[in-house]
Image 1 (tube, helix red, strand yellow):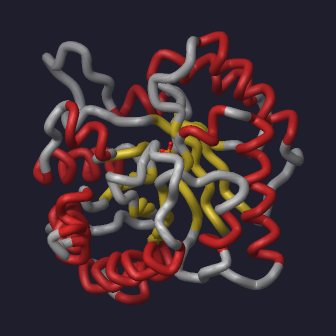
Image 2 (image 1 turned 90 degrees about the vertical axis):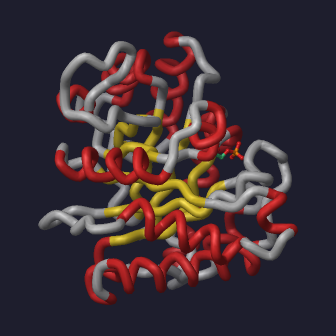
Amino acid sequence: MRTIIGNWKMQLTIAEATQLAKDVAAALPKRLPDVRVAVCPSYAALSPVKDALGGSPVVLGAQDLCHEEKGAYTGEVSGRELADLGVKLVIIGHSERRSHVHEDDALIRAKVQRAFKNKMIPVLCVGETRDERDKGLRDVVVERQVRAALEGLDLPARGELVVAYEPVWVIGSGTAVDPEDAARSHYIIRETLRDSFSPETADRRCRVIYGGSVDKNNVGAFLARPVIDGVLVGGASLSAPEFTAIVEAARAADAKGAGRG
Ligand code: PGA
């Protein structure tokens, strides 16, 4: 089963986010047994979007959470609040947070742990910058980021983890990397996960998805590779027809037999 996640970033008003959620829910079937679909609005839009999704199978996600459970952290939102709101998965360590607010590996690890504690699925984002790629450091950077975020952590019973490979230089550029190129990073991430947990745990409970300029035209080429378990979509998730076409492409890819069950 593939995982398709829309990251709405800070692009919408509450009214726009609510409308988009309604449109996505209306365009998708009432049941989606063959694909997991989530949308991640900003904090302020979580509640109205949840209401707008109604009984739809689309899952509510958040774009971040505080590394602490509670306390004097002005401006932060806790994992338990998000869980109260019905958030099931949470993006952690997105490159925009790594660069704009200087999130480091230790903070990202604490956030992954906090998400697990609150029974949410962390969507851990990793990926190299253009400069790191040009220096031939892609594999090293990706492996280091995964190891650092998971160091000393166990997957809780029935817990799941999603790792999103997002080459930083591709995000928002309109041009995705070659799917074969992305697949190499996915192999590295999967091997790192197998080593960090156990091969069985990693293969059963971890998903590795691709993000960076995914759209309805290129998504099929990514999902044709069994090592790519889904996609994290930014810009193209802001249009209901485009996003639902991506979801349909994921269902079609699985119907053809690609993917990890
Ligand atoms: P993009 O964003 O699809 O607009 O490149 C992806 C992301 O930032 O997760």
